[in-house]
Amino acid sequence: MADAATLVDNPVSVIARQPRPGLRLSDLATYALLATGSVVMLLPFAWTVSTSLKTAGATFVTPPELLPAPATLDNYVKVFDSAPVGQFLFNSILVSVTSTALMVLFCAMSGYAFARIQFKGRELLFYAYLATLMIPQQVTLTPLFIIMNFLGWTNTYQALILPSSFGAFGTFLLRQFFLRLPREIEEAAFMDGAGYVRIFFTIAIHLARPALATLAVFAFMASWNSFLWPLIITSDQSMMTLPLGLSFLQGRWSTDWNVLMAGTVIGTLPIIALYVFAQKYIIQSLSHTGLK
Amino acid sequence: MDAVTDRSKYLALAVLLLPSLIGMFTFLMLPVISSFVLSFTEWDMIGEIGWVGFDNYLAALADPAVQAALRNTLVYIVGYLPAVVAIALGLALLLNRRIKGRVVFRAIYFVPVVTSWVAVSLIWKWQLNPQYGLINFALSLIGIKGPGWLFDPSWAMAGVILTSIWKDIGFVTVIYLAGLQEIPEPLYEAAALDGATPWQRFWSITWPMLAPTTFFVTTISLISSFQVFDQVWVMTQGGPAGATSVMVELIYKNAFSYFRMGYASAISWILFALIFAVTIAQNLLQKRLDRSDG
Image (cartoon, rainbow over all chains, first blue to last red; front, side, top):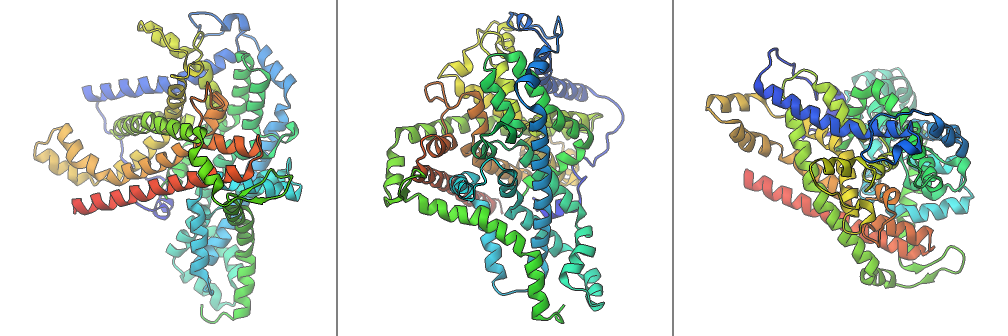
């Protein structure tokens, strides 16, 4: 299997073979199976939207009806009335965008340093980075909470942002990228008297764009959908991110499925919208970062 | 690049490496070390920290709640892993055929992957509603009276497994697709010339060539199975009657409901040991299979 770095170089390799004309019986069977599977994947979403538009009277009936009749927006009104949904959305965007930007920057800088600068103890330090990859997140939760509590950072943005702004995986990914990058361009800049820092910011970081984008998608998705850490570190409603806000709604409207599904639609819509526009890129990035 | 002076080199390290190092130390390495130390103590975050040696580990291994969580995780793995691998491989084979619209299909199967676990869990909790949910309605169409799912201790884990399969299938499919694309086309052409049936081609070319991918997806799926939390927390909170209680949920409850910081840390290191052992075993197995192939 190719390593992550090779795949980063070639982000559109997964669907490379072209369809050929003509339709055969086996193709029809393929379509039938794929279409059935698609229904299984999409029907739950359709039903979620439908439930969110139904009245309670039209929801708790057997057999279930797929289309909402009568359709109502009351459930959405209830969601907005019972929780600061706009604040949840704002928090999610702020936390995800900031931690993604920091993660990409720190990983690129450290990856470059590990790839290009010779210094004492470099191998040892790099192994210390890699060792953190073996430790599941759950091991760090308890002390991390204690540290945040000690710093007085519970219910703060920095507590939501900073722990997901660092990671050995990104550093590793970028180090591999820079190691495979020919040194010639940088050598020329060195001859002109530029130092590592200037070369990194004026040349190297631009050459690394594909790898940076891959890491950015991976970091953003992880942060956007993160649940356990926000659950631990926030208790104040005004600091909740969308997944946490959704679980808060569940506590408030436990069996009121119309309202809960309206909340789910609101909470899911932003990422689905992003996915529709950047679908190909998101799939590539997530599958490549999966191939560590 | 030999002309660089030491001074400018260390300046560059201070700018490029130090920020990452400080963050890695504060938010990863320090917590890992502290967690290890904590696991040998007793502390409720208010009183004195008491040194208890291996007591937390011994207590955890004898704790019926931990044993139940491990049993439940095993059930989860047995229900989830083979299904996800088999369905994803099947889908990847279909999506790898040269048909029109496969990019659209791939995008559809991937939608649950980008959706948060919390949203997916809520969607499925509603679908699995015994009385008004779609699943039991679908079962009733073929004459089966569906179970109580999340309300029934013997069916709750099945509900969680179904949800997880649905959420992860697209991810594993895409990884299999990448693996399929790496199989050299001439292998199939040669097999076709030899008159091999599609069945023979699958077992003599596709399956062995996909072995590294299969190892990869089983390893990451096993690791993530030990770390299951979000879906359990939203769908059942470990219930009913502890039927879906898992390791991470125990860590969470002990640390943040009972404030048994030392005990929670010890459970998290047992979780680490399990994941570590599984990873090592997988690697050894893969090496052995590689050797027997060569």
